[in-house]
Structures are given as structure tokens and as C-alpha cells.
Length: 512
Image 1 (cartoon, rainbow, N blue to C red):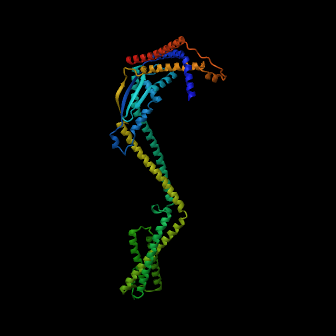
Image 2 (image 1 turned 90 degrees about the horizontal axis):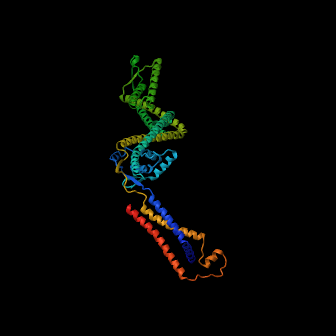
Image 3 (image 1 turned 180 degrees about the vertical axis):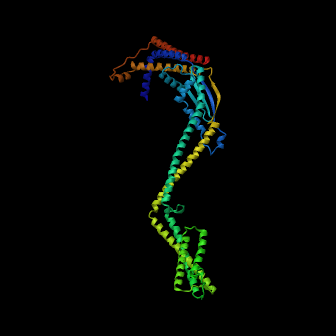
């Protein structure tokens, strides 16, 4: 610490030795700086304030229909991006600032100069924006601010409409693309269903689900068949204990009757009528019943032929009514058994066919699921885009009615009579401080270039040679008096410098 203080004291003593050099330079710098500050041209700042009203009555009413917009953010972005080269070029043309520019370089310099002097300030919370421009000509500054206000309002409307139109064109193109994709997906899905209709079945069920349904129907039909066979066997056992009476048949061919077959045919026809009320002609029960009726009718015709060739008397069963009733019930049971057998055979064939198809089932199901997934994704995106397009159309109509925001000019462009710059009352004392600092720095620099040693230790450290001794200066009243007068003169010069700049600052502040 002592060493550091010793070095600092050495620097101070060295600079003090050249104090008059520094004072002379301080006066020169001060005078030049004062002249420069005084001769700086005055600059006037024109300004205007705009209030941006972002509240719209339609906004809450159209919630959910129109696209929600953050108007505050849009205006904030607009204020930050307003000072762009195209807008500055437009501002220069509107304010007639380019009348004296003849070359490309001059125009670029003008653009850079105007860009540096245009200011847009926002209070943030209140949506108040201040547009300001500083120029040596107050009327020109006012014209620039007026043009800047016009550009600010126009940019808030035009740019938003351009963005909306671009968004609508993009959405329309995407809708066309997705409509084409939907057509292609629907065509592929239709072809796949037609190709694998037997595997997909009704309602798009997979092969496993169809086998389950068919097996359930098969078990139900087999149960009904066993019930019908048991009922038929019981009727046969009852019929074995009854006696029949045969009566002569009528000689006419039209009256020929074979009760065993006729009753079965009648019962089957009755059953067929009941089936047709519920099912179509292609139903397995209907097809099986018709086949059995056709077989019985053929059997009846052959029986009649055989009896006639053999000369056997064809008679009608008559007599015991219980026997006749049992015969009718037996025939109905036989017909029901035949129909159920046909149904069981059909379901068994279906189960076998579906089991064969099970080998291809997983692959078909995977392809069908993939097709459905692609179709669902395209359909969802298509519906979303159509909804967004309608919302965008409503938003455009709402903006055309209400605008993005309401720009209100609170303070029109104006220029104060007092120049905004330069602030001479502040610059003048700064110039004085600068002059003093330059003088001190110059004295210190000269002391380092022309070093003076004030003790033997400094000399020994600088030269690296041993010092044998030193001679002290004998005090002299005349020399002491001369040094004192030098101190007073230096203090007077320094005080005069400070007083001069203080006086200039006060004069400038008073005259304003």
C-alpha cells in the first residue's frame, strides 16, 4: 500500500511540474469547445400522440365464430416494425425530403439519417404512442411527423388485409388438396369393401366376429332341430297306437290324395308363408322350405304314378279324428325338421367358409384399419380447414366493418418554439470538465515523456545504478516567494477557467 501511494505521489509531483502546459491546453480546449457548443445549430423536435382503441363491440358477440385476434399484440408489432426501409422511403417522398438528393449514395445517406432521427415511443399500458422527429427546420420536422402519422394508420389496415388474404388463399389450396385426398381414400375404401365383402360382412365386422355370430346362430338352430326331432318322435309314438279307416277314393284324377304327403306339403306351405312375412326369398330357411316342398310334390307325383300302374286303390284317410290330427301334426313336424336341417347345414357351411377365410383375416383387417385411419385423418383435417375458412371469412367481414383498431389523434403534430437540442446549458459545463481533464492528462503525459526525479530512490530504481549521495536545496526567501506567486497565478488561471464556463452556463440558461 505504501509503495502504491508513493508511486501515485510521484505521478502527481511529475504532473505538477508541467502544470502550466496542461493549463494552457485546457484553456485552448475549453475555448474551442465553447465556440463549438455555441455555434451548434438548434434542432426542433416535432411530435404527435396517437391513441389506439383496441376494444370492439363485435369482438365478444362474434366469439366462437370469428378467429380470435390479439389486437394489442398486432399494434405493438406494428409500432416496432414501422421504421423499415420501405416505410422510410415512403416517408421521405411524402415529406419532400428528397428534393436535394441526386445520387444513390445521397439517398442512402438520407434514409439512414431519417431512420436515426425518427422515434416511436409507447406508454405500453394505455396504448398511447408518441411519434417524434428532430430537425433543424421546424416546419420540415412537422411535415415528417404528419406523414409518419398517416403511415402508422395506413399500415395498421393494409398489412392486416394482406395477411388475411394470403391466409385465405392458403386455406383454399389446402382444402382442394384434402378434397382430392378424400376422393381417393373413399375410392380405395369402396374397392377394398367390394373385394373383401365376404370377410368384412355386415356392418364391417371382422371374420372372428362373424364366426362368433354364425356359431351362435348354428347352436340355436341345432337346438331347435333337436326339439323338432324330439317332438316328431313323440308324435310317431302316439300315432302308432291309433287305428285308421280307409274309404274308397273318388274315381276322378283330381280327387287323388296321399294323406302322408299332402299334409306335409300343406304344413310346409303354411310355414313358408310365415317365413316370408319375416325373411326374404334369399333367406336359408325360405330356400330350404321351398326345396323340401318341391321334393315332396315330386314324391307325391311318383307315388300316384306307381299306385296307378300297380292298380292299387287310392283312398282318402278318414274315420278316426285323433289319428287324422296326429297325422297332420306329424307332417308339420317333418316339415319343420327338414327346414331346420337345411338351416343347420347352411350355418355349418358358413362357419367352414369363415374358418377358411380366417387365414386372410388379420391381413385384411390391418388393411381395412389403415384405410379407415387415413380416411378419418383426411376427413378431420378437411372439416377443420372448412371451418377455419368460414371463420376467416367472418373475421375479414368484421374487420372491414370495424377495422383492426380505432386510431385517434390525441395531439396533432406540433413543434415547440424552444429547440430541443443542443442542450447548451448541459454541454457547456461538460466542455469545461473535458478541458480540465485534457489538461491534467497532458501534464501527466509530458511528465512521463520527460521524467523528473524528486528523490534518490526513484533515480536508483530508474537507472539501476547505486546512488552515492544527494545535495539538498537550501531554502531561499526569494525562491519561496516566487513559488508562492506561481501557486497563486496557477490558482487564478484555474479559477478563471472554471468561472468562465460557469458564467457561460448561466448566460445560456438565462437566455435559453
